[in-house]
Image 1 (cartoon, helix red, strand yellow):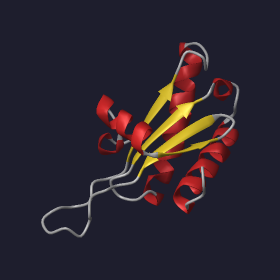
Image 2: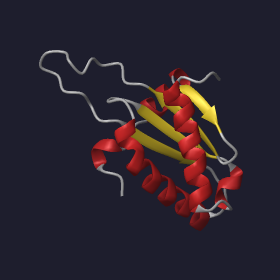
Image 3: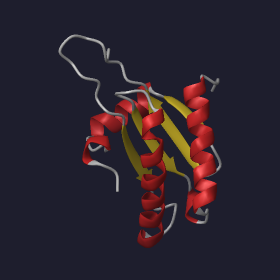
Image 4: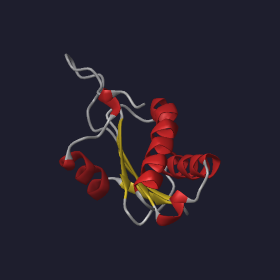
Length: 123
């Protein structure tokens, strides 16, 4: 389970990550990352935690398959939140093939996308 402080819940947060963030596509996933804009060393303010949200449409599969994909992605991103800059917004969008992918394939795609976004690769 993803802790409450690390979840994206508001529509505006999803929109900010998708519209203003960088994007990396892989065969099973598209990852949008909006790096934190707050200065963690500003007086009186602590750095907000990185937050993640997921978009899994009906194109991925039925309700059981969509929930399975969301559970796998939540588990994968939970272990990678410490690698993200404080205040970052991450939206992981599952593509139609994600329902047939296993845990390892999703992990590889997520790692490759995050590496590209955090490493400064080009679009």
